[in-house]
Amino acid sequence: MTRPEISFEFFPPKNIEATFRLWDTVQVLAPLAPRFVSVTYGAGGTTRDLTRDVVSTLHKHSGLRTAAHLTCVDATRAETLQIARDFAAAGVTDIVALRGDPPKGANGFVPHPEGFHSSVELIEALKETGDFTIRVGAYPDKHPEAPSATADVDYLKRKLDAGADEALTQFFFEAETFFRFRDACVKAGIDKPIVPGIFPVENWKGARRFAEGCGTHIPDWVIDAFETATRDGSQDLLATAMCTELCSELIEGGVDKLHFYTLNRPELTRDVCFALGVTPEAKLENVA
Image (cartoon, rainbow, N blue to C red; front, side):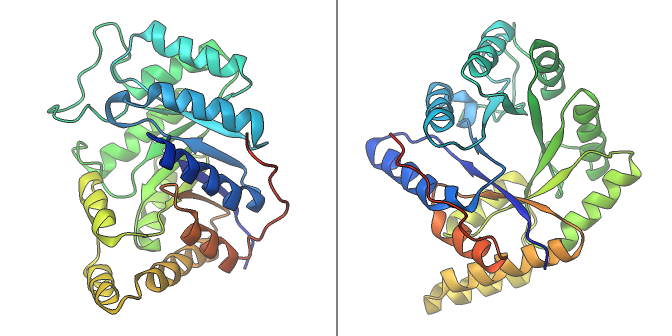
């Protein structure tokens, strides 16, 4: 089996305990030599300052190529582009450009009166502002707000045509879901890389809630398997085996890059990577 290139997503900590957990996660996963790591925004842009600080610290002290999430939520165009310029000045030139989720309690995304109205507008502006590598989101299962799966593919093409370099997909449970989406993208004329998003399930209850919220289809066999494993106390074993099999099927189908959503819990992601032949290349210096 071909050794895939990997990348990891982290989220910014909200307290001291979570800060230690993040740095522990970095220490565990950095030796696997990811091609980049990304740091998310919270819903409604709630962790904007934390994201900026974590990205800057990771870039400066870890030696990892670090990508910052940037959204259109609750900010003017000038404010958003200033954040991007600040990242570039700090040496961070990788951006994951997203429309962003609305704040909790909001009925839907409402653009700031002086802000970007869509991720396409954000991508176009970033492309003009500086020499960024821009990644965007993609949805193998229909986005909850999209009128159809075809509309999802069409919108992804608009984002890539606007200047994005690569797409990272939402997670999914079956390889066929990704292959079907990839085929639809090729048919639509998309020729830029589409990287599968992989989610090792550490907590089934939380994962199921997350999947239902973002429109990810959960096959009945997955529900049955995790409910049985939860009763038996073998959830981690099942999650590792299921995730490893999914990744293996993707690689056999021609995928050479995988993007892992770690939730700042590195053990399952590390174990899956080991099973795929991705082993430590070097020890990370202490992050300080």
